[in-house]
Amino acid sequence: MKEREPKLQPCHGSQPSGDHGATGHECSKIDTFCTLGDADSMFYDSNLADHMVKLLTDYAKSPMAAPFFVMAGFARPHAPWRVPARFMELYPEGSVPMPQHRLAPTGMPPIAYHRQGIYLVDGSVHVATPTKALNDSVTEDWRRHYYGAVSWFDFQVGRLLDTLASTKLESSTIVVVHGDHGWQLGEHDSWHKQTNFELGARVPLLIKVPWLSASSGGKHTTSMAELLDLYPTLAALTATAPAQAAELDGKSLAPLFTNPAGRPDSGAKHPIEDGSAAYSQYIRCHNLSLPAYDNDVECQPASAQRSDAAHNQLTIMGALLDSTLASSLTFSSPSCSSPC
Image 1 (cartoon, one colour):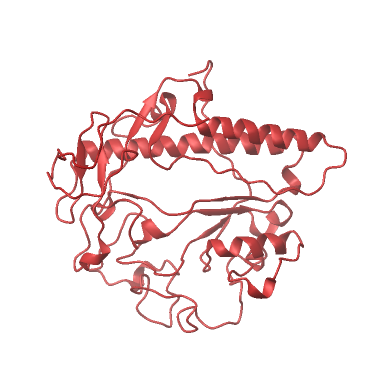
Image 2 (cartoon, helix red, strand yellow):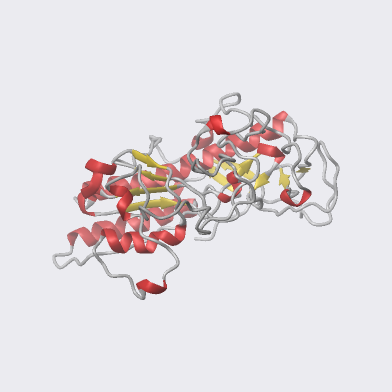
């Protein structure tokens, strides 16, 4: 079912209102939010989860079931943040923290900044600039609605995990959860994704391998990883030979499931030294003798301006993300006694 978009004034050619009054901004009519009292069946993500639950249930009943691979591409938390109202009720006013660093870092090159606009439901547009943050009310509203959209996604993933458990597929099924880009919610007065800051370039990656939970369950690794690694990783974990393995750009992360503190290419040179990772600036440590991705706050100069989620000024041009190896991907599942 195609999602119904909120009715908004067209962005292009409109005069922004709010703090900045800037023109020539980057803005789309999907850059907005709304909470509705519609039934869950009126939302794409709920219908997708319904379909996935049926697929898994039917598969579990099949007497000749072969190994399966299935993907579900949920829409939220991509904008517009159109979700059932009960998920916004989880985040009342004042419950969501504001960004700690609301202006661009000192000394940031202009090319690192991307102007973006925000639509409000009244049709007004607010545009960020490097020197003046959006007002508190707009910033809080946007952050609250993003949190609500993430919880809506959590709820749908929780339904799939519950289905794996109820169909007895849980112990034999690898689960991977990932995004395709990061998101900025006012950090550096940036919104959306179109920057090379870590918050824009880094993605969530969680992998659950039930039969390796003793060594990897609930562990966190700072090893270099990228989404290109998923195919060779899943092939290795399922003992399936990847097609044209020698030509793959990604590497298998399977060794991390027995040693999360190690590296998948144990014994190789540091990623900076062998050229496998390129940085616009050393975002963790300026000393090459220290890993550039070790989350060591002490290696950063005191004057470095850091974002909420990481100690970065500018982030990698290549791929840097954390792989979270979870023993149980348990998501909160807000309930509703009747369709909302």
